[in-house]
Each structure stands twice: as structure tokens, then as C-alpha cells.
Length: 515
Image 1 (cartoon, rainbow, N blue to C red):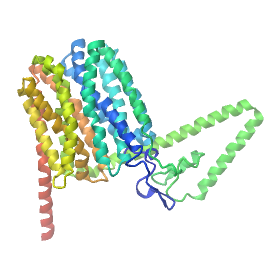
Image 2: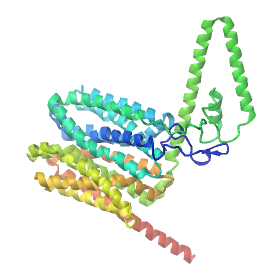
Image 3: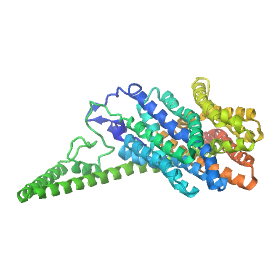
Image 4: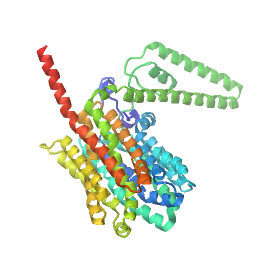
């Protein structure tokens, strides 16, 4: 879905061959530079996802600075987190056309720009645009290539590699919480955001490490199908390395191409007679025309691949379990995000700031979250254990913690609940595996993109809803109860679907047997 031929060096289906020679495996797969890709993805998770999990520190600063309602102020953090995931399907278009490396570098610049411009915010609405939208889109442009590249460089060790790279979220939440708290205390929140923006420029370095995976001994490039666009691209390119079609091109287009090239050369010869200055101008115009034409073909081709990847997968929505999975995703992520945004203020209301300053509750969630991902992954890999059951049990544990969190008013009790939230939320590492079990390998990329988008919507709406409930009731309790209840409904709906589907299949087979 997100992979471009520039990045992977080979195509899927019938296009994986040049003539009759099969493409040899790349020596960097499952080793070599692949571990640099894991390191790059790990840093991306620290700088992006870790920073977003630490936004509760800045949320308190914004409340004091702008004196706006909690519901309105929470939109800043939720926009940044939500847009990072929601734009995933659309960032796939850039990856298809430009490749993962260029997309990530541009995203790193955009993310840093969003942080830096936010340091000059005059009101909350200004932050909506600079931090919520600008930094959010930039984060999405880096986050998605980081996940995609790990999947491209690993085959046998893909689960291990993804697990190692995503642990950066836990490390990042712990480190960024301490860093932002220190920067805000020493320099103020505006200078803290400016410094954080400078730190986020390292995302460009992470993007530069995402070297395209293409065998050095294979010089040809490939296309998906042989059509008029492929012939047009071939006619526009003067290099034999640019595009090679699947089928056999007819001789007539080649002759036309040669004729056009000869005409251009004749024109250039006439121009040379007229003077060298005219040669320079004409050649410059020809280069511009060629570049624009090639760019147009690339955009059209990339959009076609992207469009067919998403809107050609309508069969996914005929899978009732997968539809239930989407409904679950719409409620799940908000229950996980709300504590990160509002816990610092809850601790302040309970007069537990001194204890929380020694070891923040959000840091406890982040640290235990790392172990949760690893341990739940190991348990689900056991031959006698069902990944689906581990996934459901982790969800039940998490929703129970969300519902009981408002009842805890001491630091120790809150720390215990936060540790359980961190451990049970490790089920995020199981989501690709569960998705593959539901839809199969063929539709995995499209299905997972839809699930991430649903999570983004959940993250976008959750924190503002909690703040809005506080503005009405002057308590965060009801926001946890309501979000936890909706989360429980999603889990129960997800829990019942396999049994309903199994019963329907049995009834259908019985009817077929009777007929």
C-alpha cells in the first residue's frame, strides 16, 4: 500500500521479474542495514509518539497562559495526536510517489516547524493551526514511513523488529515527560517548545537513514502494468533506467519516439546556427517541459495505485468481525490517551504534586508499557496460546483500570492502576497480528491503515470530550466512566462477533446440505 518501487526494489505479482530472471533476495533483509532501520524507527517513536504522550505537561501550561476552558484547550493535544494517525492513508500517496526517505525528511521539517511556530502562540486557536495541524501532519509523514520501512526490511524477524522499534513510544514518553517538565520549569513553555522543535529536526536524520531497499546488482526498474501511462512515461524519459514495462511494447511507439527525438535534435541544430544564447534558453525550456511531464505522469500513476489500494478493498467491509474491529478502534484509543493528557491536572487537584514530581504517573505508564509489549508478544507466540484471546484479555484489563481510576485518590493506588494501564496497553503490538488473522495477508496493509485511521479519530475526540465533561461537572470522573463504558461496549461487540460469525456459517452449511 505505502511501498514505492524506489523503496523496495521489486514489485508484487507478475512484475517481480525482469525478462525471465528472478530477482535475488537483498542481503540487507533481516540483517545488515535493516537494524539501522529499526534504530531509525525507534528514534522516530521516541520523538513523535513519546512527545505526544508527554503533552499533559504543556496542556497545564496552556491552561494557565490562555485561561480557556479545558475542553477547548485539550483540542490542541488531541489534534496533534489524531491527525498523526488520521492522515496515514493520505500520506501513503506521498510514499507511493516520493518514497519513504523523502517523505520522512519533509515530515521532519514540517514537524519541527510546527513546534517552533507554536512558541509564538498568542491564543489557543493559533496552536490549533501550528501545533495541531502543522506538527500533526509532519508527525504522520515521519511515523508512517518508519513503520513501513521496518516491514520492508524484515521478513523472518518482522515481529521482533516491529516490537523493538515500537518500544520507543514507552521510552519516549518517559524521557519526554522529564525533558518537557525540566524545560518548562527552567525556560518557560515557549522556549521549551522552541527547543523541542530544534530537537525534532533529528527526524530528518532518521528519514535520511531510511535507505531505499533496492539490490545494487539490479539496474532495471519496474511498473505495475503495461498501459498508456507506461508508454507515455517511456516516451518522456531519455533514460533506459526509468521505467520498464511488463509486456512487449509495440514498435510503432518506439518509432514515434525516435522521430520526436530526431525532430528535437534538428530544432536544436537550427537554434545553434542562430546563436548560443538561444540554445541555452531553448534547452532550459525543454528541461522544464520534460520535468513537468514526468512529474504529471508520476502523480497520476501514484494516485491510481493509492486509490485502488483503499477504495478497491471494499470487500474488507463485508467481514463482520473486521467491521466490529473498526468500531472497537473508534472507542479504544481515547481511553488510553485521556490519562496522558489529564493526569497531571488530576494529580494537582488531589494535592499529590510533590509525589508526582518525584516519579510522574505518566512515566509509570510509559515504562510498564514497554514491558507489556514484550511480555504480551512472548505470551501470544506460545503455541498453546491464542493471540486473539490475549488481545481480548488485555483489553478487558485496560477498560477495568479506566473505570476504576477515578476511585483512586492516593498516589500509591493511582500508581498501581497506571502500571496496569501501561502493561495492558501493550496489546498495541498485537494489533497487526490480529488484523492479519481477520483479513489475511493480502489485505493486511489496507486493513491496518483503516484501523490506524479509526484510532486517530478516537484520539482526536477523546481528550476534548473529557475536558468538556469537566467544564460541566467540574470533575474528570464522568469522562472516565463514559469513555470506559463505550470502550467496554466495543470490546463486548468484538468479543461476540466470532461466535456470531461461526453460528451463521454453521447455519449456512446446514441449509446447503439440506438443499
